[in-house]
Each structure stands twice: as structure tokens, then as C-alpha cells.
Amino acid sequence: MSGEISVIGLLFEAGIIVQAVMLTLVGMSILSWAMIFQRRKVLKQASAEAKRFEDKFWSGIDLSKLYTEVSARGQVTGLEALFKSGFKEFVRLHKSTRQSGAVMEGTQRAMRVGLSREVERLETHLPFLATVGSISPYIGLFGTVWGIMNSFIALGSVQQATLNMVAPGIAEALIATAMGLFAAIPAVVAYNKFSHQVELLESSYVNFVEEFANILHRQATTNAVEAA
Image (tube, rainbow, N blue to C red; front, top):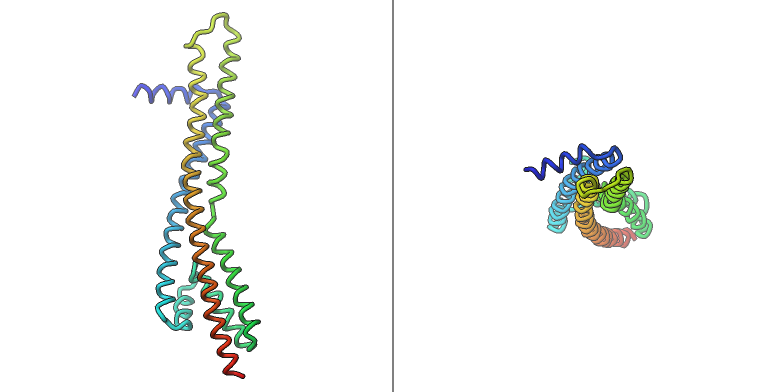
């Protein structure tokens, strides 16, 4: 308990620059934790939705019926959004032209745009976590250097320096480094974990787009042959 009291006392007695550094790090830590919980929820939900949709897609359900179900839900994300944009463009182009090449080119372009949007949505806030993880230690180090510098400057005005005189200033300065690491470590761990999850989801999205495009290409080719 006395250790906690002494640490808190050092925080309040620190210089204005060191206190500003500590407040900045506390704010960055709070924001990063809020984004960590938010991203964890979004990515977990995206993984569950992708698995659920793939199971339904490969169950043999009619694509038109599946499109109707997906469209009825309004705003959709993930594989459902890719399927919706691709099938919608496929049907629209197929009504206007019987050239399978033109139909598939437009369909794949629509799904690539949707894929880019979905990946961008999944990566939201990840750059901030990377920034916190990379600059927090340096911000804390700045506070440490500033605090130690002021402690030694203060020693220059006395004739006989003692450990009791310099210890509080150095201790409060080192707290800034500790807080920088406290803010950086969770942000780095979360960024690496979430980046890996986004890569896995993106890979599954890309695979779905390719497989779905192959199905639509066979359907377009078959219709073109029947029409001929």
C-alpha cells in the first residue's frame, strides 16, 4: 500500500511536462483498449458469419433463392456482401448481353470492389493500434529523459548532492517509461493478432470470390450455348 501511495505521490509531484506525457499515454492506452475490444467483437462476428454463409452457400441452395434471402436483410457484410454484389451484377449484365466474357468481367469487377471495401472495414482502427505500439515507448522515453535532465539540473544548485535529493526525480521520470510500455505492449499484441485474423478472413473472401466466379462462369457459358 505504501508503494502505491508513493507512486501516486510521484505522479502528482512530477513536472508539468512529465505529467503531460503521462496523461497522453493514459489517453492513448484507454483509446487502444476500447478499439481492441471493438475490433475483437467485429472480427469474431465476421468469422462466424463467414462460416455460416459458406455452409448455406455450399448446401446446394438455389442461388436466386439465396440472393433473395440476403437482399431481404438489407445491409449485409462479409461474404454475404460479396455474394450480393456479384450475383446482382451477373443478373444485370446477363439480361443485357449474352457474351459470357463481358458478363464475367463485370461480375468479377463488382466483387473485387466489394472485397476491397470489406477488407478496409475489417482493418478499421488497426493503424491506430500500430501507431500506439510504435510511438508510446518513445513518448515515455521523452518524459523519462526530461525528468532526469531536470533532476540533474536541480542538483547543480546545491553544494552537496544526496541520493534522497535525486531519487524522487529519477523515479517519477522512470514511471513515464513504464507507462509507455504499458500502453505499447497490448497495442502491439492486439495489432499482430488482429492483422493475422484479417489476413485469414481476406484469404477466405478471395477464395470464395474465385469459386463463386467459376460457378457463375459455368452458368453463363451454359446459357450462351443454349441460346446459340
